[in-house]
Length: 56
Length: 226
Image (cartoon, rainbow over all chains, first blue to last red; front, side, top):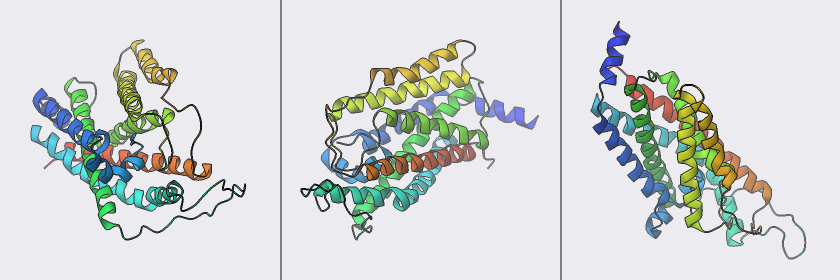
């Protein structure tokens, strides 16, 4: 019973925070993995290589 | 509950990013720094004397604390970003009644994330040791992005689609590799092949651990009773 209530409570989640999460996630990943601006690139260089993001 | 989605992504991403950073400094960064010795010419493989032999051994981490701090910082940024996307996907799956997320299930979500974001693109574009010449960055980024989107959709269909539509998932995963990743027409690498191969497997193994931790932690923070 408890489990059912929980599911309903969590299924209640609306689209807005999900959309917000997707946008935030993509923005962060663009900065850390994709952007070619040289300041960002140099700072993120080792991490990009380690994560196998296409780097330069 | 809505706010919990966002805070869970941040907590899980910071924790998984730190775990990944520790593993990287133990395993990946030493190989990366060793690769830089060949990139800069401090060490030479297949030297002018005709011998393919070169010294083995990683340099120490050195005193470049700013550089290493950036690596830790960007790991956290990256994993928080992954965390947001992973939790968004988990939330959509629950909202549509496809599954009920548990921390144990989170492990599988994390592994699926590893397959989609790391392993599938690496199948065509292996993790590159510094000093590995490669094709133009633009087409490689495009192929990389297309591959991870197609693989993520493919895995989703295999996991949740009913009936023969799941086969479409397999096709989606396969297509980027049939198209093929952009590559140069020749081999130009200056590093020993052993070192490049080690770097690729160390990188993939480390991100497999990071992603698995991320999947578990996302689900754990999200389902935790306060």
